[in-house]
Image (cartoon, rainbow, N blue to C red; front, top):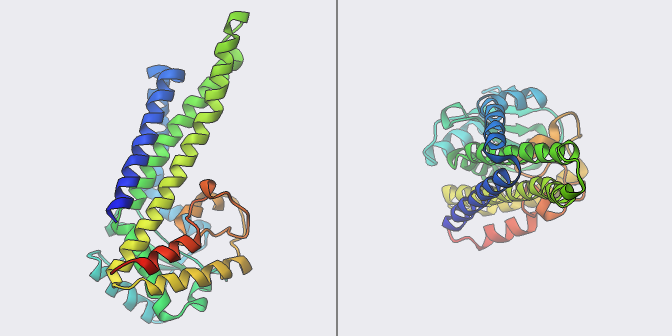
Length: 283
């Protein structure tokens, strides 16, 4: 667990270092400050209200306590064991098997399950999934991802300024080397920021796997669930509509696993590696 925490700190440090370097090289203090205000404002809104937007996107409804009594009981028990307040429980319609947690603070958190995952998994596996999602809440992953998104957003903004500067800001032959330098940095910087941001996302998934397994003192349920979910998502991937790809990092498993991704551009670690780590975990 400590290893994953250290990795997240190092990646955030790398992202911050990249921001400072790019800001100084391309946008200067003014560009950096404007980008920070712009990205910070957007992510402030996202941090506090994105969970409501996500529920709306996926047409999620709060679960009926009588119909889903066993699910409520499991969430209540595991959240108590994790030292968390009871989150709200939502159901997402559709046969796509997945789950996600959201909310700005543990007291305003929620856990959502698709109808597909409830049909696919048995009680033991579903407990493993629940522990994983509650681990995201406990580890404050919404906050961590917001920080990463803010820094990456500023880098993208400063890079955009560099592109416009390269196009319109120079006129003489002596400026050609500087134009090339600006264009290279404007393209490479956002790509590097994205790769680091996605690496943070994958690191937090590993950490949630481990935290959830330690909460239950058993990682076998989540390992079995991940195996079933990978096959289930291939048969019923989440339909790509509107802004859904932007929310892929929220889910337990990449909801678009039917598509081909290079690992460095994936929001989630490979299922095989997650299962391997869970089975090797001493809880």
